[in-house]
Image (tube, rainbow, N blue to C red; front, side):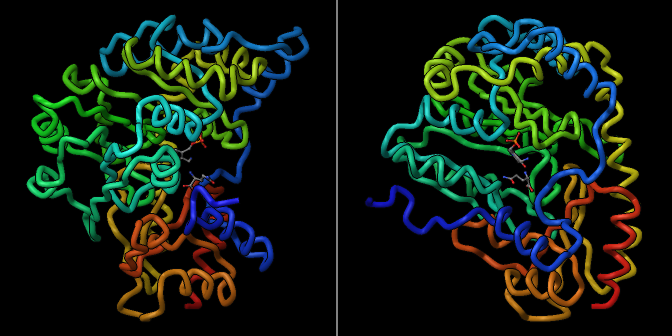
Length: 378
Ligand code: PMP
Ligand code: GLN
């Protein structure tokens, strides 16, 4: 067949995790915890299976779960979303991103993304006939030049995708950035896709700035979230999307013929679990302890650490040590030190290589200690 995605290979997450396994390396590449999620949550889910919640859920998701999510967004961001018409439970953040794009991107539509960007955005846009307009950001601070973005806008600009906190850079959006975005899209019809899967992982007392906090953004945004991050259970592949009803109506038209609905007993278990907000309000503190530990230890290696203000990723640069391409450096680390990371060039359309590697610190303390001990050998 004629490929719809020529030039697209296997995602870097599969490539690096497979290599890590092959070389028996400590896997700090693909982002997932190596510790168990709360046993109470597992019991609630198995209980719901035993109670017979084993058939199709309603198409937009379990009402009780949508109601709890509406309460959560109202408490955290003082934003009102109608659980009946403005929240849909999805098969992970990835499906929510794809569906949000599929319901509004037409051939020729331009979508602005900030790179390094999570790797599912660009292929999804291309598959729909959209045109990716990447904005390349650079280390160490990956700051956005808003004057430059203004020049990128055309009559065909349909959407801007933001990811806050950002994977892979660990950057978070400041109030200044949010205000610049509001000014940029004023008097346009540009839509926003706000990937907020790391909303509960921000450090140093910095609050997460959801687009839900800003009425001018909320009214034109799809917000994507992931239970994988919220509950330390990436393998369950559950997430959700929130959007005003005129957007959610179109989202559900695609969703119903894509997956129809997602895992029922898990939705029941998660709804019961999230009744207690303490289940997620401590996430930032939980991960800050890991970030601080990892940064302290990594500071003793030869790498230079980049800032990490949110997400569970720490980026480092090695340009002062080696001029190997980052993809080669990542392979070298697996083979010589036994530690897997992600080369950040994989997140740029042009594979721009700033000699930056990303490490995931959502790991047990002993895993992080062992990994750094190995990296000391470099
Ligand atoms: N967006 C970002 C920025 C991510 O890092 C991820 C991966 N965890 C996703 C979306 C997809 O989330 P999920 O695993 O729930 O599909
Ligand atoms: N979000 C995870 C990461 O950035 C992995 C997601 C995936 O494997 N597709 O590492």
